[in-house]
Image 1: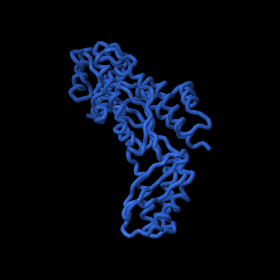
Image 2: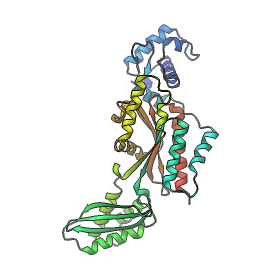
Image 3: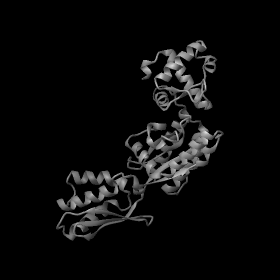
Image 4: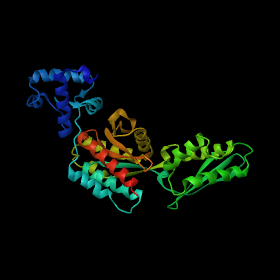
Length: 348
């Protein structure tokens, strides 16, 4: 089923059902729709169209209610083809900029303030993925621990020390490890891995680097183990979980929120999901059962990537809440916040 297969009347009824449901959270019945100005047909005709939309998997009837609610598939079709994205007000833009613009503060402070701004305006929970590799490098070296293995030791400017294990080719001379460490240190100190990874790889690929083949392999292994994009190289900040408890007045809603809290506790799963949004630019939506992480709670995630000074995507920020999100308002809110964070990370 696609929008192109719906006639104008079915499209208008479908749009009205979704918009009314997102606004009220209640199942939408034919009598309610018949009062809408944009729908000039009888309740009986509306009921027939609703039945067809239900058969197509776009609507469902909760419990014994005569009304209908959009399914996850229906919400996806609405978001992709019918939703009219609104604009943030000047006061909303100023609130986001004002809360994020913490002069002289580091990236952690900027991102923490950004999540607070998002959760406050959206009245949902907000999340941000912070890659550890964004920290500027103070020192990097390769330490041999056996004839075939070495530790890549990275010291960040904030004093954080992390080690990763790499395999070495047999018979490697110790001088190769020293050369590899010196090569990376000369290019990384004072910069993050995300900022310099592309330039270093370009230098290696163009053979501008004065390194022998074995040392080049060690450098490439060191880069790969630190910037391979694995989920455990990132951390996650969550703000505003208490907002999810607002307007919860039935046992079913409370159970869904409880389930969502459990899903948020499994941060590694959420980070893996947010990693998917780093592959492109712009806002990305994960709606309900489209992803197994939210299959039980029936939640949606709206996220957008942010970039560093080298124009590389380094993290993702967004909003998580029930599938009945005001997507038309949340999408520009998340997009604008990601833009503000990007500008703040790029300032001198």
